Length: 448
Image (cartoon, rainbow, N blue to C red; front, side, top):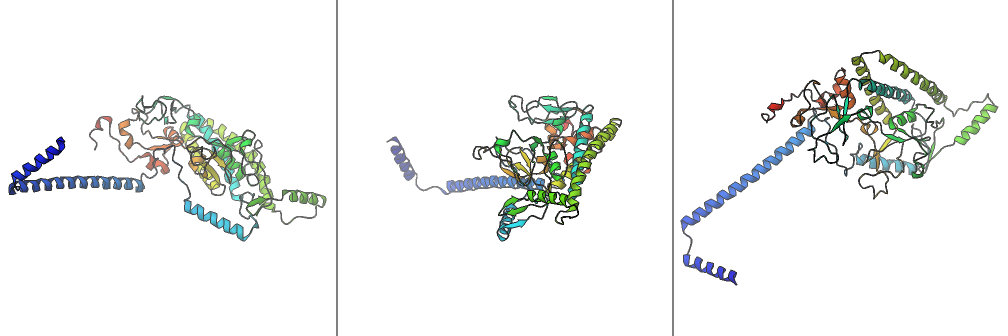
């Protein structure tokens, strides 16, 4: 009732006041114009800010100098990016399906899909194995001189006598510490990590490990399993070697090893007859693997004994060389031998297919009943590089949190070898940001 009386009283005042004077009307028009101009300027400033922000992000992403700088870790709920685009994977699956329909029964010709070894990768597998042994030996010696620090609550690692002051801790109760790290002494496993996978006796005949077999089948480092499948022979982890290619019958792998054994018995009874279907080159390669495996162990022992008497600089250079040899050799093997990884966790499996062990505890594992979401793996999934902050001068104070945008990063192995005296490799000069001059601590407020 009071609102109705107020509206009626306002109408009477407007009627009594008569028409608005030209002066008041002009003032109202000027006020509206100014208000509209101010609002338009705010929109322009906001649009300019968004465009500059987008331009900056695009420039940072497209800049070749800092394209290799490691980005912050992804969220736990996000899936790893596919190394091969999804369109290429779909097209590849369609082509395989059409080829299977056109020829239901066919003999696989390309190794290693047919069960045979790739001849040119057998020696590479031995080189990778020897390089891995050399890297582990060199790191164990370098850690006696250059210490490694590790956070007690997260996976952060720092190379040096004292930890840095950059606040990036994501462990429990990190909010109470303002995301500061609590450092403790680390070891070789903190510098480089080798994820483990299930060992496959027959990578073609039985490529999957069931859930009930998880305790019976041993787990070994994935890079070691990759070398074994590529041709390395280790007595502790036997594997099946074939001399005949397998057949694919309606998508299923079928081999005729029993026929081969019967043929061998016939050849032993009649030594003058030679089977032309058996490739003699493949047989000699398998025999040479046993000899080369024994030689690899002796070479590792000889190299280890030689390194003891060498200086720290030479040891760091040899360790870094072995590191690059291991990484480059593993990449060559992964071009032929497939490696799978889970899209949500760190599980890795070397072989044409992933295992069926229900052990995934990452995001959305309930919908998969604990099974892994397998996809193509990369080198960072096979070998944990573990990027750390690069320290230019060991004698300077610890890295400051306010200057972290001026610091670069590098794999922990490379950073350890560089601090021990090895030259900075050209592959990581941009990542280490050696061309960026960082200001002093008292100059932080003066920098724009």
